[in-house]
Image 1 (tube, rainbow, N blue to C red):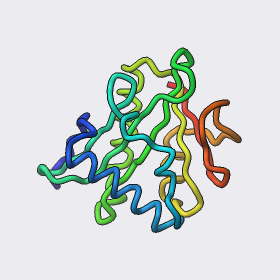
Image 2: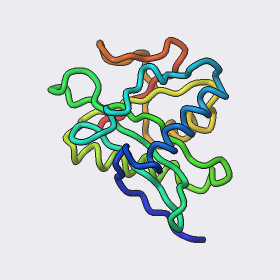
Image 3: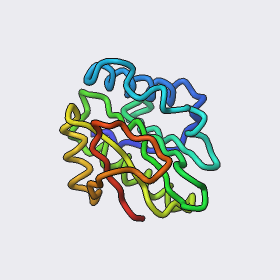
Image 4: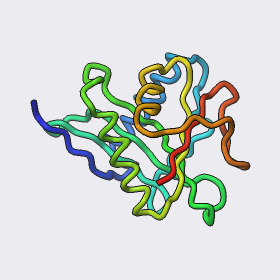
Length: 157
């Protein structure tokens, strides 16, 4: 098996944008409507406060994940957004590799707590988060948007 590489990539690249759109499309297919596209500004995934990681296998896109600041900068809270792995490559550890790498980068950026949300139509994501040290919480911090039907998680770094 060819190993994957996980590296930061500008959100302006076609690869990173393709992954964001693939994730958004899958959310729309699973939940209907617009997903949370109106609550994600792609510019938030840019340095210095944001980041987007791209996973490749033999130069082919296999997955991605983003990170953005939420709440006041002094709180050092960030949100993980748009974790997505190509459907034919799921259950091969790519999602876990992306999550581990985004946590490492988040620490380097000075974040102390990460948040994310998922939903009932994403059971594989819920399993990944629960088995990787994420704690389910009742609500997001004040000032941060969260979908009313979402399941919310946090992780201290």
